[in-house]
Structure formats: structure tokens, C-alpha cells
Image (cartoon, rainbow, N blue to C red; front, side, top):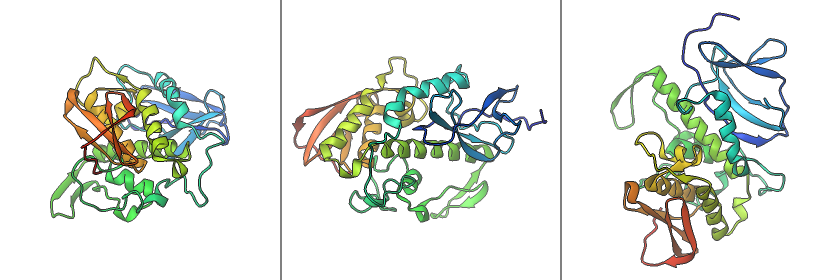
Length: 299
């Protein structure tokens, strides 16, 4: 085993696709620094992203590896959980994260930029001025999902000046963590959007996809503040009222539906507009049978 630089490296991205890809022979290895994937010939991936079907179930999980070959750290591995436990937990959202054979998309659809064809129709063109939860997760994730990479910006490591003239100091570990977390959520949204033909769905059909996702998570009665609310709901499958509301609005933006929130924290609700009518959501549910009125959904 070669000597490796001592850094904390854990799981960064576990996205599950139906495996029309090559299954990789090899095994997970671990030392006191972290985990890496070792091929049968003794080699291991370095500075790359790799699909791996570790358990031979015909579904591959995607991982990022650093310059030393360790699985990359973006602080998404829950405490007291091994990489194997985390990998298993991700399997619970295969049903919404896989790409079934029947999920046909329109001609010219780009799975790497699934929202590129909806930029103007769904008001996704960047930049624009926002008040409220108006991005698909973040401006950078939205830029990647729509292919507007001229609008992508992340402060480089060291001192830099942003477009407003502010001086920013970015540490390498902060840059790496932000980059990996951002990539994780971009991959998650690609995975989800690629799994169904949202371009040709009615607004109600799209709203039901959001309903399905929210329902797959549960209310967290042991909530402790901190962390990414959208990640908690979509990946950890738990949250409180405010986290569900923020997540619902993000999903609505990704599917071209207007939405808004009401209240805050553990008293927040949300509304999603479908065919000009507003529907109330609370916690992990949304009532798509009874429309409300006099609610402005502007995003």
C-alpha cells in the first residue's frame, strides 16, 4: 500500500442509475485515512468520478475520488454511519433516482443539462433578480442543469474579488467541500429529471412527481438545526415543515411550476400552482385535490 497524504476522505456522491454501464470488478478497501476502490489488478481510480457496481446488482453507484484515490469528502456522510451503511441507505431512493427504459425524452434532450430546453419557457435564464426561493437549488446548480455555464461562478482558493467588489478569502477545504456538495446536488437533480418525461407532462402530472418525492420522506421529530434542508429531505429522507417547504419550492422550480411559502421554521406551509390554481402543502404532503384561492405564487 503506498503512503497516502493524511486527509479525511469519505463519501461524496452516491447516485444510482440503471446499469447499462460496465460493471467494475474490484473491492472497497479501507485504512486509517479512508476508503478507496481497488481494481482486481491492484490499480485504483484517482482524481476522477467512477460508476461502480460493488454488489453486482446491475445498478451502479457514482463516487468521486481525490488525488490520492480516497473517496471524496463533502461532509455528507451522516455521523456514526459507515460508507457501507450510507451506500445501503441510498438504495431507498432508487425508485425516483433511476432511469427506467420507458423514460423517453424529447429529441435533442441533453441528460447532462436536462433543463436546457426549458430555459425561457420556465424562467430559468440567468442572471435574474430574485426575492425568495427562486433557484433550482442554487444559481450554480441551475446553471449546470440548464447549460448556462457562463453564469457559473465559484470563488477560487485564496483571495479574490467578486462582481460587487467584495474581497473574498476561500480556503482549499471550504472550496473542496462546496464544490463536492454542489456536484452532489447537481447529480441528484440530473438523476431525478432524467428518470421521467417531464417535458411532455401536464402541470398536474409534474406536481404529482413532487408529491411522490415529498411523501417518500418523513417528519423529523428529533430535529436539530443545521445542515442543508434540501439535502435532508431529498437524500436523508427527513425534515421539518420549513425544510419541506423550501424543498417543495425548489422541486417546483425544476419542473416549471410557480410556488411560494407561508410561515417559517416548524410552522411553514407551501403552495404550488397548477393550471392557474394553488394547492396547499404541509410537511411531507400536498393536497392536489382541493385548490385554494387568493394565494400569489410568483416564482
